[in-house]
Length: 305
Image (cartoon, rainbow, N blue to C red; front, side):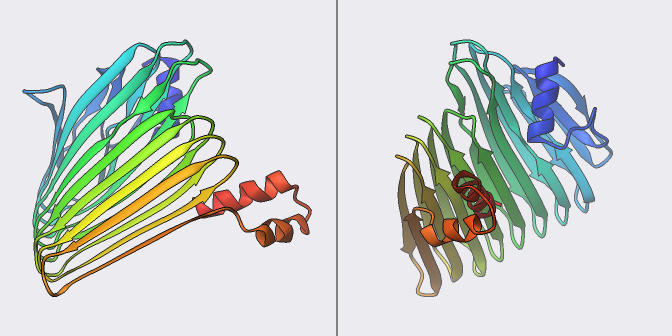
């Protein structure tokens, strides 16, 4: 690995001069290190660039990290990763991505991840995206996440992107069977001329299934954000979509949640709120000795926590 990769790994994953568990490091489209364990096997895909990760039934308390790093311009990295999570397993999956540019050439990472959760399994999925470097090349990260939730399974996804990425299209789709649960927490910060688009599409096909989509975002400078969510209830189920955004400077946010109930016992709710930081919040913090800029930074940090 080069020095830039090591710094990006510290930003997007829990890398500390190595990993003590299952991992695969992707550097500029090439594997830079891999380790499987007794319960978590990582192998190359046969049909596309990417990985097949198999987690044995009953696996508890283990983790797997699959960070991807692009360290220079003129790279368009596309990877396909499939996760097969066995019945009753309970694991942590970390899939961060960093893009670094020092020239005027663009760089992009497109990670296409598919999750197949068997009955009663539970996954915490952490995804952090960063862009670094002083170059003028456009830094793009376009993650695609497909989730298939078996009976009584649960996936909790925590997605974080706090600056540095010029363009991103984040597409997440899911299908939930009986008793399955999906929880997604998204936090995004854009500035300058950056653009971020989020698209959620969830179908609940099983009785007692549920989804909770929570998005927090801040748009600064001349940046633009777009939020789209579609929740479809095809059975007695519960769905909730919540989008809260703060705009500053000339930032713009467009939010459009959509609900479709195809069953009389489908309980679906959506909320969307967009606005500026309340003036009284700034005033209160300034009475404690903070400057206006420091007060705004504190409010934003708390909002995106």
